[in-house]
Image (tube, rainbow, N blue to C red):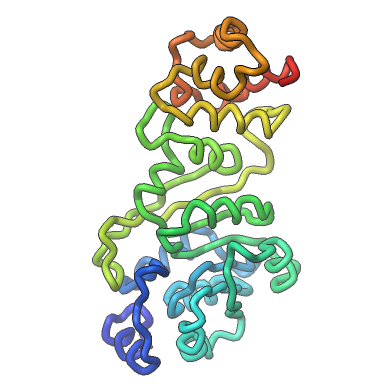
Length: 287
């Protein structure tokens, strides 16, 4: 059975009486080159245990099993378990786990299921849970790389440059923890049912340490969130809204200029170094 062949997929779905649920954000691949590129460009080899989120019917899962030592696939939709039982029967290094990735202790689960290996993520993420899943995977702090298919809009957000429309607090979060890169685009015709938007394969190479020294991580991200809370505000006004109880406006202006910034600068113009500098100066006074 070719798990990216539309006729084979239709026969499999009919056999098990499976129907797509829009609420699950399910889109199955019908372009066989995509799973191969994902596994290859992710650099997966026999030293890796791979976590997959939402295997669907296993199009990517089967390919990953040929590259990796072990594959752990977490599937929320229990209706897909019998299908995966059929399609993954010939792959002894694949383990299908029924569950919600957002409710799992990811680090504990992965290391107990696949001990002694390097860890990576490869997945076709449901569009409606991209941000929380990426956050959970990053916070697990065990993966070398996270390679996922997401809406192109989400991929652009992860990789955006300061001052651009796609740049936001989540961009800073991702770049603080990882080096993101868009690998390639995937058109709607590569899936059934066809999504309304183009997808992108994106790789996050997790950092061993932040790109700049951060003395107070919580304060750093408080500054980041404040800076994007109202994008049209200047950085000084954004900081006043978040920190006004501890600083006068004049003090905040001084902090901004001490960081080499114009008082009319908006928060979305700052890179990680800029946010770190502001957080450092704010941290010099208890707030």
